[in-house]
Image (cartoon, rainbow, N blue to C red; front, side, top):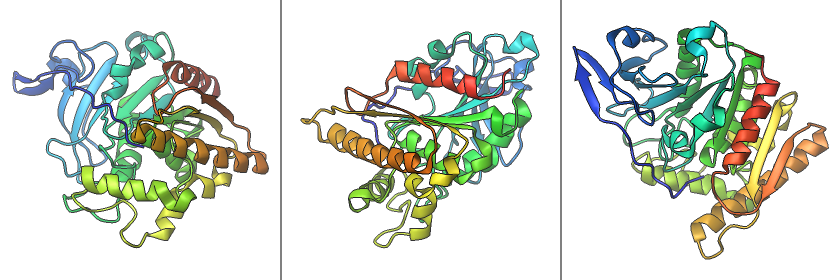
Length: 330
């Protein structure tokens, strides 16, 4: 759901020798060279308007796309394995989705480089909007905000075309925090053949419980932060088919034969309404989801840990290790 933390953007945009480049957002380093700038190409409806490929591991891109009406458009950080440039190997990919009021550099601030040091996996961290909910909204008053189309129809094939990846079910995982945890659960079920592993860290797994609190929150937050009064699921009447298509507890069979990893906090700060609302709803929804998985005989790993609606680094480290064990080996 929505996170209170708003990251400070690192990096200063520059243009050198006619090549638009940037200090890597969340990557540090120097301006990319012309040679590195040719490493990735336009395609799949994505036009690169800014990039930095100078850091050995963290490569940054920003795109123009008809699916997202930002100017400049959405960004993505691609974190490469330590030996990517010398090994010649092909790697599995983790798509790591940020929470609300965050952006694509959030996990760099949180320590994703350290989490993955020495590990044979590519990590792709795209923009998802401050309250985009990893969806194509019912309505928008600020132009297109089709995050689902951007991620599934454009970004995934672009990554496979430009990096040495396993472009297959057993080559991909999706994970996320908060709103991104919901996005991971949604994408893994709705696009079953894309991801062999799915993880939700404090991500809601049930949209309709408690009178549809998560749907209402998605509509309100997206209207305020992303859509200029538009909504993800429709107001005052929901697009019921869309809610059902996105709702993890209504898609249980779609999780069969996947690795599933769930994390929720058990003790949110009761003096903080934001923390209490978010993690209380997350915990209840994940328990409902787990019960349905149990009834269906679908194995899953879960943790309930002290604290509220926060990123838990050790849980992400353990998750990444489990993802590497599940996916095709580099």
